[in-house]
Image (cartoon, rainbow, N blue to C red; front, side):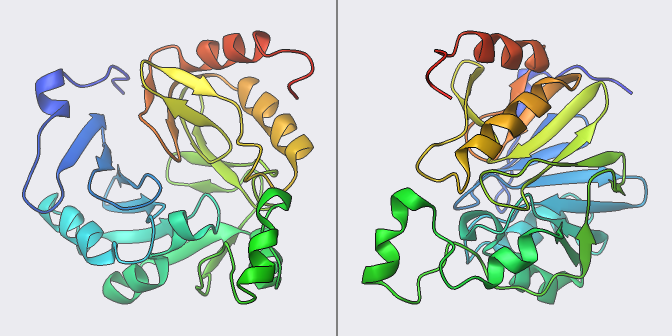
Length: 245
């Protein structure tokens, strides 16, 4: 399969509802989704969504899928983790489409915790006792390391949350959720300290991702990194101050 990014003119293709952007063959970055990045992935005979952004995006995502001709072919809603800015529209999108929500096994007990804010933000729980970082939904499929969805392997990368995952197509590409951050000009950034539930685990997971072979990286926030993304990640890690992590 072709692994080259699409020409700029095609990457900028937009439509009224989706403002879609096919940035890699069969992968659409759903622009206009509020919150974290949302991706529509085409497989043979069906499609699936990776992350849904914050609450209120479900109809927008469905219209994107309909405009791409797969509105009635959404099979899965795969969540890289349960934070409300990534999973906030999962339950509503499931109602609209019947797609099954898939999340890592370790995320389920975390979602049920009364206090699941990271240390740097835990004070908010004292001000807003009912505040939770997680969206509310009932998972249909529980994922574990090595499970497969379409062409993608599940890679467990705890740290940001206990059940954070990547979806990895070997020697091609990886979706990382919030296990990594991206910035303009193909810049990769380490996990966010304030939002990581366990910074040591998050750091170990970053190094685990760096041990994989991929050409393109699609993060939970920020633009994708297309072209030698694995090498760029390893270079970024090599430049981190020893005391940083």
